[in-house]
Length: 282
Image 1 (tube, helix red, strand yellow):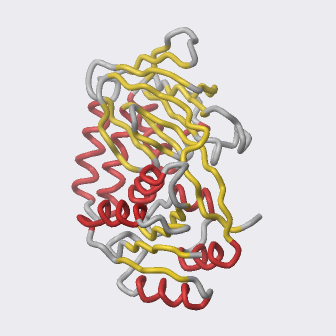
Image 2 (cartoon, helix red, strand yellow):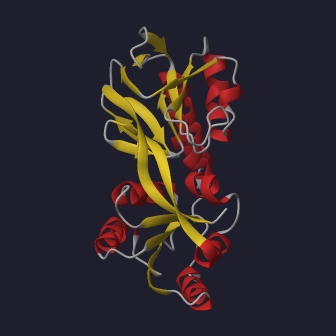
Image 3 (cartoon, helix red, strand yellow):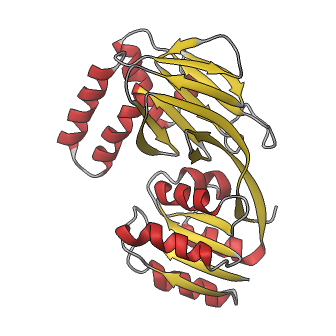
């Protein structure tokens, strides 16, 4: 096997010694490979260049945004991607490898790794492989990031802004041709992580999230951050393969843990073959 390893030393749980650790793990398993430690600004170009060199696999030690971007760029026909847990939430790595450290996950992949096709979702051309949340509860993600950075003042300011904007941009949606609905937020779960879907299910789990007052939206914002939103009493769960969502302004969203701003009208579809992951053999 010939691999490329890309390490973001500035990411949440990586550290300056990570490139040397990665080289040692490659040597221990007798695997030929190069280890790269690009800056934040060089990350995207480094991933693209690695894909163009067509190795057997690309191992990414970085955060959720970089893991999602690497999987999206490689796609179903590119090299296998191993998104190792190097961030704070590590949504995709934990879904694939469990809650283990990146050196453990890397060693397991090199010891007896195999390809696994991963499905995902697409929101107006942007892919996600774990979950997407569209609507005002997504605004809590920026408050969460400020809190994790130790900026309590900024976190409080963003939390207040999220509360003020609750109910200001209601979403309209149509899923799989069913009757039009209205909701505060729409959450989409991939088969990789959904408790309601089989791993081979050819659809996304969809949840219309419709709190009725400011207290509900606060509770939902907290549960969105902690990952317990599906148990909220305001959640209605279903399935979808294609859909459309629109609002009176740009739609805040979270894609695999990363906050983004979408246009006022977005399309949704299930992608049965999104990328090939390198995972330990079952």
